[in-house]
Image: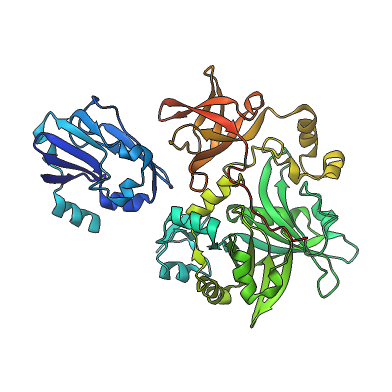
Length: 122
Length: 377
């Protein structure tokens, strides 16, 4: 699996032709307690950069964009009843959606884990 | 370095690891490491300590001994003040001539000062304090003088607040709700009011700036007490249906529209004598076109401020003025204004959240029962 991050603190973890999309651990820490996550329908076709989810914390609503294009093949339904799962493990149990990638080169230009760690330390 | 003002407790917030945000010209703690949800729940179950030093505190004193200060101040607010006893406090509204609300405030009648002059203690919102004090000084020029106090204000709120504070200040245990006492702790002169903005029992303590951190630390040393930021302060007040000035009430809303008729005394409704009284009386007789109501979104998506409210037939009927997640309520809650014909409890409406109509209902407030102190009889 390869890990990729955007400057907006979303991640795309790539395993074969499936990308797991969510918000980074740093992002959940900045958001504070998550109280609601709005997820897309399975089957939705999205372009790179499309808004695919909204995460609401006790503070505000934030849009989540996908770093890769493709078809939504799975959503993390756990988040519907237990949105705080995002705080408990943003990059593990708190993932948002899985996308079947149409264009593997979408991840080019995204940050790898080391680059992202340096980015958020700035 | 920010150009914002800092309260006397600022260094303590930093020491406690608070996230600091700009608010009404001050650097204020929005949350501590416990987090907004944890802080909210802690206040509902135990006791929370809030820095509210950014709020404006002032003493209004009559300029001659024949002036009844309560009667004089009634010319600016619609509350019944003349009947206030020494040390009794009241929530009221600073009114504009067109019936709008310049600010909401707490007014306490104090015993006469050392020279025998009557005075009132005023606590106003941070964002309005300069304008409020200017307005009051100007309107009452020659009849009263306003002394602005540069003191810290610490709120201790929650079901354990009385027990904790009484360990240091035994006098506070049986104070009536909405009353004030002057008391001393060691060399600290304290002005303690039993009131608050969380729906819980609690106090606001006015204290000299240089003693504020020591006093706050003494309270925080009790295991029942946690420091609470502005984030939880907002969800706590929203759950009990209290208005936030600049959001739920402002110069464009009247007390009648805002459902604050209870803050207008019966005699004042009939006799008027405050700015905007003719408009208020007209609205009391004929009804207002819109009304502040509680709104419960169905499902779990919160509806934030400025979310548009639609009737089931698709007409825009109002807007959310405060909305978020109620941790104690356990779901999204909101308040806002709707056209009066849609203001009945249970009316079904739609909220336009991110371009999608989401069902909601007009609901009774408070969303969580208020838990104010009642003396044991």
